[in-house]
Amino acid sequence: MMHKQTETVMSAHATNGAAARTDDGFGFRLWSFEFSSLCAINVLAFCNLAIFYGFYSYLAEIGIPPHWRGPLLALGPFTSLLARPFLGRFLTLGNGVGFMRLGLCLATAALLSYPFATSIPALVVVRVLHGAGYVTLVGGLMGILTVFLPREKSAQGFGIYSITMLVPNALMPPFVEFLLPHLPGPGVVYAVAAPLMLPAFLLLIPLGRKTRALAAKLPQAEGQRPDWTEVRQGLAAPGVLALVATNLFFLVAFSLVFFFMRDFAASIGAGNPGVFFTIVNLSIIAVRLLFGEALNHVNQGRVLFLAFVGLALLVPLFGLAGGPALLWVMAVGYGTGIALTMPLINAGMLTISPPRLRAFNANLLMLAVDAGFLLGPILGGALTATLWTRSELFVLAGAFLALAAGCVLPAIRLMRRPRLMT
Image (cartoon, rainbow, N blue to C red; front, side, top):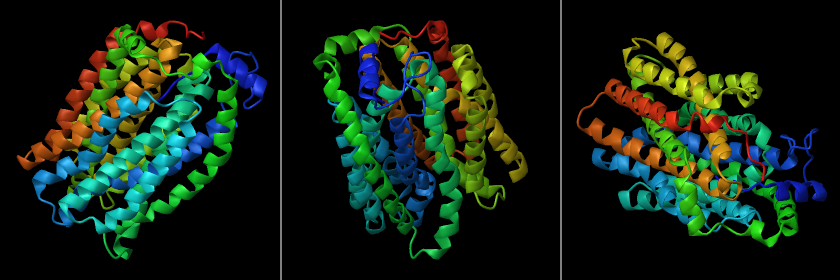
């Protein structure tokens, strides 16, 4: 994620008329064209990720050896993990849309290639391509998003934005399960998502014009990336690394549940395993729509800590669900906890970061996402190969969530301080 917004940026943007200011003149209004367009693009982009909830099982179906499945699953996030620190150093408001366009091209090419990639070398190439497309697209998107996100509504804005990541997770798994019996091969379902990229390409046309116009009005210093001295100073700022570690542990736990729930749900007679993810994500969406505004006014650090404690207690209980009904009830609680964590982590980082380093520090949070989705599948795949059960993996996920709760503690006080607008 790339955050660059200062009072100068807001003043220039208001002069340009690209987005309306709030009534109190404190920042932009939340529902600008730019924000709405970026949310729409994100929905389409995450549709091509949500369909990979069953990728571990798919690798087994096409005969990939067990010791290769975890690494292949993690190769996409691994590519993102390697590329993101360098990518973040070159992204600016002016070139963000160009990076998004490149990312969409790479991701589309990868999706169309999956049906033909049935060997390990071919899958390595496709997964690297897919990971490169994802990190380039999301890096450019977040660099633009946080320029237009009102500081005083950051928790609500991140909550709405994260809903756009979750809508595909709620809709695509059951849709994929419906499609699979009617497709000539399991890999074809990944290629089916490629046409979803076309509307995203079209939205980039007006978005590119608006962002370039705004970038042209900024002082030259505002369009430059921070140097490494500033980056090191930012990393040393209180709370920054604590929130990065929080996000890392959270995403390791989340990826363990995401990638290994399907087989567990099927083993207890859940029918369509995608229903678990649908319930989770509908719960997240409901909580954020109903209580998103309230997140702007609560003690965000304390709520974040309590949400992680609740999740750490709940997730190990998944393995005790003897039937689908109890698992579905647990899915509601799981979704409620996640609904609180994601926007509060991002809002907290925005609060404690100096304005010039908001983009880089937000990018660090995305780096933790990449690392979490890398470590989770590798760890889960390795333990499964040594005959760990899915229930034991859920206990491990609970332990990582407890670590996330502990990492929040140093940042609680810092997350309460007023947001700096200059």
